[in-house]
Image (cartoon, rainbow, N blue to C red):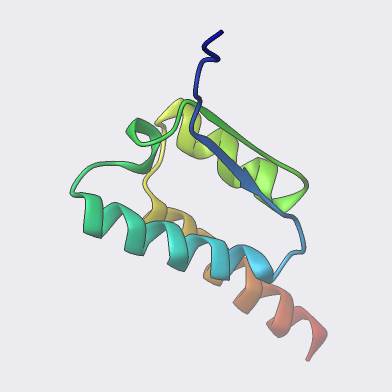
Length: 82
């Protein structure tokens, strides 16, 4: 009996770890030469990873813009705490 094979991409949450996820996915995208959403059959995650997964799966944003938006939010939070 043959079982179907699926390529699954799952992201962990953890706020700042989202930056690590983005850097890793961008490197994979660059090496593959195509958007990350075309490399996997299923994409999911929890917390920050889920937000990243939604953005990738819907194709509404690129990884570089995620990093840009995330760094702007981080800078704004740091400014508020000062």
